[in-house]
Length: 372
Image 1: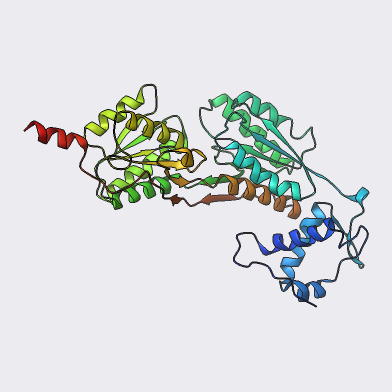
Image 2: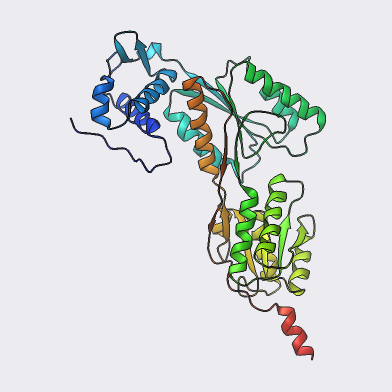
């Protein structure tokens, strides 16, 4: 029997790779409805994996309704009318075009290949709308929930309401996974990015190019921005840079950037790619070269990073992978019946492009020298 090979170096667990293979065989008609699957011993030889991997893969497919087990007889491919559908609710802020396409692609890739029905609902970036959607999860007989939700601007009343809803869902055995955020006092699964480490990585990159005086474009009301600045400031200390100048991303902040550059700032770290793009446009409008005069670094590595001229160096936010992993984790919880919350924190990596380079003396230095 020819052995099927799986990628043991892949981030995807072996049991999920095996489940994908059996799911493909069912889809392609290699395994027919009502047909008995090979025994565990036969699978051991064919797939070259352990018994636990086989059992977890089969259990996952049973939970999806694709397979059924018969005591003492074995595992069978379910008939079409026997297949149990999973109903997954996905709550996203659809006005957030910056991240949503990536989340949707990752989530739908996983859920669409399983026997899952999933409905994406718009939170409208509104706390009351989110509360109403969460309160309807149980009445709609949902299997599980993936929600884009942060702790930003939640007043005590809303926070208490959401906490109560989450506890009710947990008591009902309905798993909830929060994307790219967390809620205080709510013990649910969270998939987040190590924002502080990302800020430190930005400082390391600029320091390596010799930048000593840098600025950070901050959006203070956003938790991720505050954490990125904390990491950047910590990195500045570690790499013997000056204390970074903090520029608030409010109205007329472009003029603050120009003032900072005239005062000697040669490196700018923006809390996201959109702010970095606006920064580059403002600098170029005043005749500054990027990165010849000023290096600009973004965060998130969105499509905007490639739309810049020069193309933007940016820290990578694993948006699509985060959505994919959240969906995979939810299916695992539903397969095993284990709804104990899990937390995953992603490391940040840097995509180096053309917007950062070696530091040169700030333009104001040359202006002062010319006045002597």
